[in-house]
Image (tube, rainbow, N blue to C red; front, side):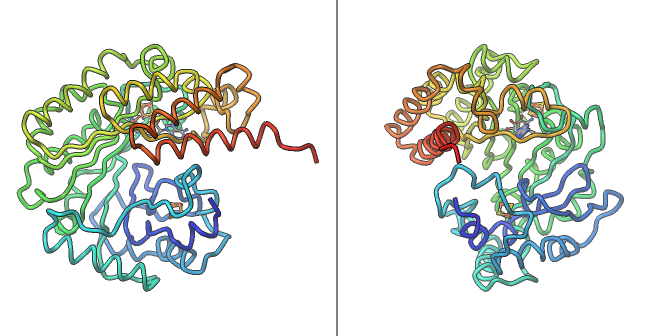
Length: 367
Ligand SMILES: C[S@@+](CC[C@H](N)C(=O)[O-])C[C@H]1O[C@@H](n2cnc3c(N)ncnc32)[C@H](O)[C@@H]1O
Ligand code: SF4
Ligand code: SF4
C-alpha cells in the first residue's frame, strides 16, 4: 500500500473520534503523532476535540498528502489492497433522518477537504481502561497494568445528543465486558430509546460474554469482535488465562441467541499473526468456516513490557523465526485458498499480502 495513496483517501478524521483511558484523543488507534488530552473531570463541547488542533492537523495532512505525519506507516492499511476503506459514507437502510443528515454532511466535508467541520462524529470510539481478566503474551497494555484509570460514563453521557446522530458507539479496553465504567455505559445504551438505531460495537476477549448476553439482548443492533488468535491450545498459549472451550461456547451462544430472537447482531474475530498463531492458521480458518464467522488478521506492534514476546514472535520484524514454523508457506496458501472459496476475498488478500511481505523479506537480494 503506497503511503501517499492512503493519506490522500483516508476518511477517518472526518468519521471517528477516538478517546482513550490515558487521556489520548485522536481519530483512530493507528495515528502515531502527538495527541490532544481528554478532560476526565468535566464534559466539554465535542467540537473542542473534534475541531481541535490535533484532528484539524490530521485532516490538513491528509488533504495535502503530507508524508511527515503520524499517519506514516499506518498499521490499518499495512496488508490491505490499495483503495481499501476504513469505513463507508453509505447510510445503513434503517438509518434515521438525523443519522443520514450527519453522515451526508460528513461525506461532503471529507470530499471538500474541510479542516473545520460542522458535522459530529459518525463513530465514537471509547477505550475505557486497561483492566482485564486475561494476560495475553503480546498485549501492548501490559506495562500499564495494574491501573484503574478509566473513562467516566457520566461524563461521556453528556454527549448523548451527538450519539443519536452517530452510526456506531465502539467500546474497547482492557476488557470492556468487565470494566465497571464500560458496563455502566453499555447499560445506558441498551436501555435508551433514542439510541435504538445506533450500533453498539464491542471489542472483547469474549471470556465473560455469557454473563452479558441478557444485558446485550435488550438491544437489537450489536456488533462484537472477539479476539482469538488461535483455537484450542494455540489460543490458550497466546491468550494466557483464557479457556478455549469456554470462549468457543460463548461465541456460539451469542450466534444462537441472535438467530433465535432475530436480532441484528454481528460477530467477527480479531487475530494476530505471529510465530505461534501461524502454526495453527489453517485450523483457525477451518473453525471460522465451520461456524460462518468472518476473521480479521493483522500483525502486532512493540510496546513496553512485551519485548520478549516481540523478539520471539514477530515474524514480520524477525523473519528468521519462520524456521520454527516449517510449513508456514502452506499455512498461508491453504488458509487463503479456503477463505477465497468461502467468498472472503479481503481475508484471502490480507493473508496473501502477509506471505508476500515475508517472502520478500526472506529472499531480499543482498545489496
Ligand atoms: C487491547 S485488546 C482490547 C479488547 C479485548 N481485551 C481483546 O483482547 O480483544 C484489542 C486488540 O488489540 C490487540 N493487541 C493486543 N496487543 C497488541 C499489540 N501489541 N499490537 C497490536 N495489537 C495488539 C488484541 O489482540 C486485540 O485484538
Ligand atoms: S493513522 Fe491511518 S487510519 Fe488513522 S487517520 Fe492516519 S491513515 Fe487514517
Ligand atoms: S484480553 Fe485484550 S486487553 Fe486483555 S490482555 Fe488480552 S489483548 Fe490485552
